[in-house]
Amino acid sequence: MSLLNDLTGASPGLSPRAVFLRLGAIGALVAGTAGAFAYAGGWLSPGDLTQARIVDRFEQINGPHPGFRRNHAKGLCLAGRFESSGGGARLSKASLFAAGQVTPVTGRIALAGGQPSAADAVATVRSLALRFHLPDGEEWRTGNNDIPVFPVRTPEAFYAQLLAAKPDPATGKPDPEALKAFFAAHPESAKAAALIKARTITSGFADDTFRSLNAFRFVAADGNETLVRWAFVPEQAATAESPAQTARADKNFLFDDFAAVIRQGPVRWHLVVTLGAPKEASADATLPWPSEGASVDVGRVVVTATEAEASGNCRDVNFDPLVLPAGIVGSDDPLLSARSAAYSQSFTRRAGEPKAPSAVHDTPVSGAGL
Ligand code: HEM
Image 1 (cartoon, protein in one colour):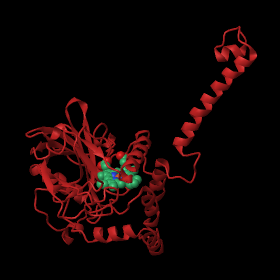
Image 2 (image 1 turned 45 degrees about the vertical axis):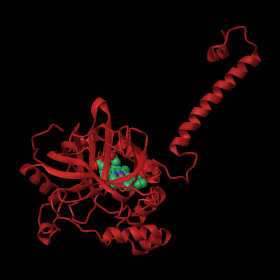
Image 3 (image 1 turned 180 degrees about the horizontal axis):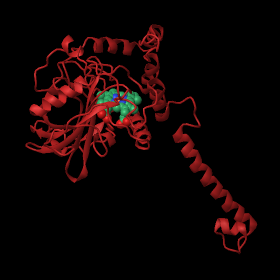
Image 4 (image 1 turned 45 degrees about the horizontal axis):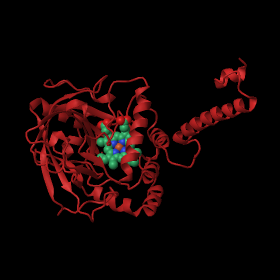
């Protein structure tokens, strides 16, 4: 058999024309596959925003921190359970909302920003990421921040804002001219920034409220869909941050305080779901939803244990907001797919890198395996 016939798998009796046609088909297949990879990698459209470029920008702003998340880099793992009140069962068929259902939960508290060893500061945005372990391997992963609205509406604005808010090494503060230009180009972000600045800053993680910010849809057993946002509202009354807290030498005081509270007993947050009216924006996380919107308390998260990040616990998890159980689906908010893509890119990079220990050295609190 000739070399051409070997390559095409053609039988020895094929004419040279048929062989070349087959070779052409193989070439087209190879070129198509390579093109698909190049397209997915963003190489054909250097001007387009891709997940790789978003994560490159985090690295450009924060410097290299191999092994750590490119955002929300400093964190502590937690574990506990979700106790359903039954109030969510008419809105979503997800099994965790059935009355009396108890669902194991693992998760992570963290500070926004790409510096894994930054000193804790009360005004830094705090987060609560949770992973609900439903029966049959189903999961709900959700990342929530302690701000009333998100500072940007689109992934492109997020990318621009990262650069505009980059601290100047000389002053430690962003260039005011760059920020001014960003807000002039994104008036919705200027409004959101004012709401974020005006928020009440609580004393720590345990008395803070964490919000989904993005909209989702709950799907009921009869197929009915409800536009929702949610918040994890602390059972503990909120206390304001105090100067005595910030004056402490402990660079991890927010995390250490949380671990100390858990050593005394569980911390609880109610999962409060706000039902969006048709007029409410589902694709603009810079806009608050009116407070007159109906809300339903669907149960509470009870955190019983904390543990420093380590191999095999919350460190090696991607809290992709689109990992959802049957009964919850995404909305048309463009941030959701951008988050999913960027988290995956951040996860892939950090998974392949050597790991250093977390700056948060917690004494494990027994009670639940993480
Ligand atoms: C386009 C917009 C956004 C981008 C590009 C972005 C990017 C990222 C990246 C790269 C990570 C690290 C992921 C990992 O390595 O596991 C992260 C973590 C996180 N993000 Fe975003 N984010 C965006 C919007 C949001 C929004 C709207 C929220 C709303 C609450 C949010 C909440 C969080 C939380 C809670 C974490 C930490 C999760 C954990 O503890 O692992 N992000 N983000």
